[in-house]
Image (cartoon, rainbow, N blue to C red; front, side):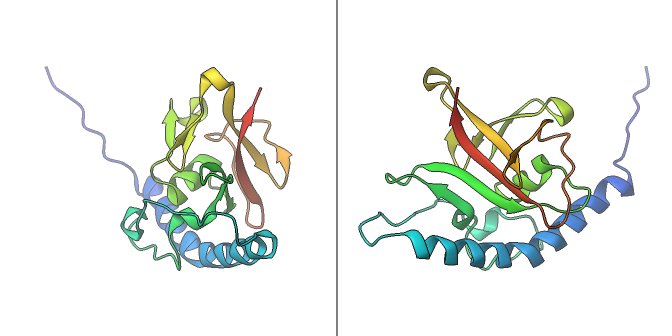
Length: 162
């Protein structure tokens, strides 16, 4: 019996290279904006955010100006409650999420992908938690694996309850 081996097409590789280039250019700006916004509303008695990811967790060729955890929002105890990142023409919200948080947990693939963990925090079914996806402040109408983003959009994941 013969087996068939299929190589990934060049087309499949181009979005990854483009994503890396876009993230390398956009992430430092988004991080700076997020840090400036966060500084304006934080008080000195809040605990400092700490992270376990290092720059080595980023895709090859992407050199962030800070660690990926700077994009996370956290509660008073330092637990991750969300993440925000810029959209990129033609890239899915899921692909971009995995680019900024390679440790994100996903059940299923493609159109059936369901994000269950971000920043090391898994949504707790017992607490009726889930990761909610928004684009420019509006609830997404399709899943992260289907949602094609655009340059200039703001993609936000928030730990929510039902």
